[in-house]
Length: 578
Picture 1 (tube, rainbow, N blue to C red):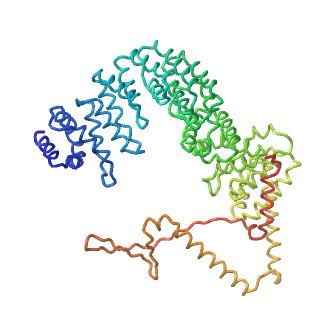
Picture 2: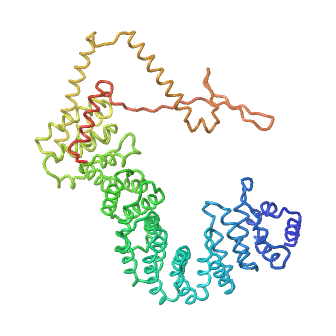
Picture 3: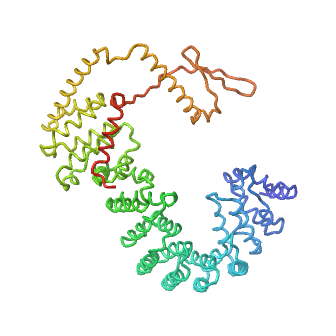
């Protein structure tokens, strides 16, 4: 320890104090952790002034260990003796130097601890904060929190008095502080809640209301009898839906889930319905909250919220942006996911139909899923054919999903609709996807359900007749392009593919990762790489391996692209009113 002491003193004299700390920080953390206590001791003995030193510490691009060194000051701060004003300025400087980093405000907790150790420090900091109101930094709430830990009644009452201050910034900071206090004297909770509610009426700006919501929720959560204050607050300000206010509601939904009652949650969700699509942070909070709500099987609450949100935002943001919620939906494929798909395809709204496909956006090859038969049974005549067309239209590019949805309808389809359903399966699905759809139908032809078995068998027989007709048509010379035409087409196609590859390479992640260096294989069955070690290099040979994937394209895209596109669009838009 004596050796470290001498090195610290020498580093200070040689003007390389921070460089020395950077060098030994991690070593000290792994050892006896002597550095913080020794620094506090040297400062209190007057060997050097840590506050002055850190006041000049900068977060420069070349200073990669800024947060590590600042961390040392965080550990030392509660144990040093220094004027409150100097420490407050140093804390402000180091916090602002951190910029927008998540760890920027980590100094406030040790600074509050510094103030708690001497009652006069909290009073001095409060005087500083009120004498010269700093728009860039909040020392007021720290002073109130620190003071309340020793003199709760005095500082809480003083904070309540500040709620009538002429400066809105002071009001906001006082409200924030009142929400941060863990009240030991429960008799203070009622007057604090009343004061926050009254203050929000006097200064109903967005930032004050947002701060008031968070603070009031924190206060009423400390008692079982004060929830009415929070509900009245939400009702009073139900028309003032600013971005910060809505974000505060989303934060409570996400972070304080254990404290939210069944009376409060619907109110907060209703506020969050008004979120603007561009406010991604708020959307993320809502997403996590919906995931939690779904996990407790409150599926209907999630659906009501989403549909209300889509309507208010004019369908500018898809359900795919609520990815945590969608991921949880997939854990309930046969219940919640199936029900939501059915509901949105029955909605007769184009946007909700599109969002139904977004629910399965990560399943490129499609998944096997059925309609919710309970939802279908409630609908009127013709619903089965209507849903079959929707499944074909919206999931045409995912044939596995389309056929599984239609298959789930077959047991309950009225007899008058069976022929139409059979024709839908044959064309466009089976004709477009003779591989996957036919394989699926062959499996269904062995089903124990007579209806399913008959439809599958009939479609397969119809497809065999179709193949015979196609083969016969191929023998008509007039329908076959000449060799020259085929050659011209393939040259054109090859040119298009080359241009597409060039564009893909220019945007490739791997190309950017390797600074645009590409290897061209001229011959052989191995690739050669050289690993450089200083002036030496090592040759590595890597055998080539095959990489392949398969994609099933709809054959009707080649035979009748415009007719197919028109058919699919008709299926999507059929019956839609908006």
